[in-house]
Length: 175
Image: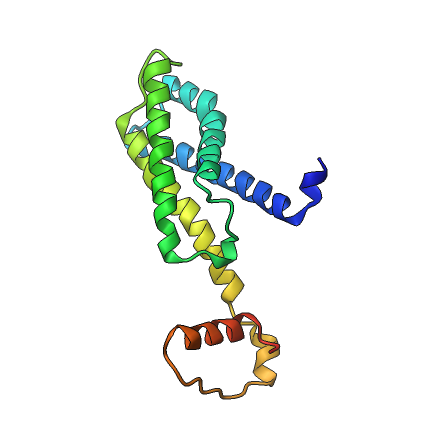
């Protein structure tokens, strides 16, 4: 329990919980999208499947994300190339989900294939989008404090060193 007081473990636990919530939302929305054209909504047997398995799917996906190392990096430093591990982890999690529903047969009927596809796509969009949104919020300029002391700045050099200087100045306006 003392480990949760450490900021690193607390951040990883928060990321684990956030990914579990996002995975649960993706799984639930996949069922809603699958049965969007049905006038009465989700049929009872699939509603039972959704209610009985949403927690296991969400925690299972978060465990797969942890194994793939998605919780080791701070979300504020997430970049677009980091989206590939998210896609790979979501693909493996969806594959494991299909295997469990096919081999273990927790229900008398199978998981609809379209739910698997929707779930994969929504998981990638929600998990990756949450990380990109966090980075966007972290890099948003603070307009109230900067407006009073705006100075022009010319950085010579368009290489990686110049880009690092610009990024550092944007993240730390007090420099």
